[in-house]
Length: 351
Image (cartoon, rainbow, N blue to C red; front, top):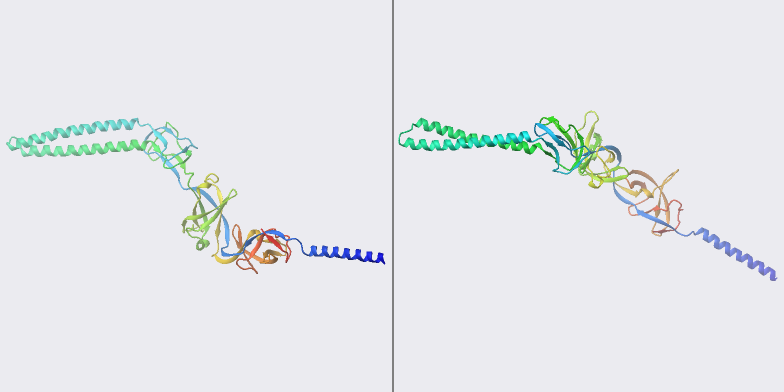
């Protein structure tokens, strides 16, 4: 009898343990997840196009005067606005200036003489000792002499201007990209001497198919990516004139200055442009999508922190969010971390 009671007691203990194990198996510990909200926002279908970075200023430096070059900047030289790029041999111009100064001095001496002569003849005319013809002739010579001074002064100003333009300075800060001539060369005015590139002000030049013109406007922001860096920048210029051959129009986007050290003129970049009109739609973060062979799912977390696995249809998207269709509404919470192994109805802990 005693043995029978011990057997029954052992059986009951085992049953309790098994029941406890079954309960523990049915109710696993809540797993931590990170969530994000379903948001209703405007998204448009987009496509990626390749574009090229250009400097907003890449100029040819031309000679301002005829003459011989004494010195000019080397390719690769970094220059600041106002720095001298080209020095000319100024001796011929300085000699011309000295000659013209002498001509001006001579004209001034002639004017003083004729002025005195006019005054003398006017006195003689009062006593009829000089004819009116002599007075008129001298007065005319005096007036012409004063005009000669003006002409000589203007020629002197022209020479001074040539001297100022002989030594060429940088119109902006940048780098010398090419040297066309060398020191010691004789050049003529307007000959190309150097090329200078502005490395501080860069822009993207993008050629977009004309069929997308209706979806792109000046001021719209586009995503630009290269070398692992992504920036969102506004369109600074839109030229709605289609190239007859390529049927594209040009879009220009100024690049933020903090990317000048990472991107360079001539580099290719990728630009994401809209190809449809924007419309309001439900969106989720890309990390919320669970891709399986039978479809795409998201894990909704209800107000009781319980899991609901819902199928969705993915449509347009941006870099971090995608438009979806499914049994979701604005403001629903979906898991973006730790959702891959969750089962329907499982409890979670929101982090």
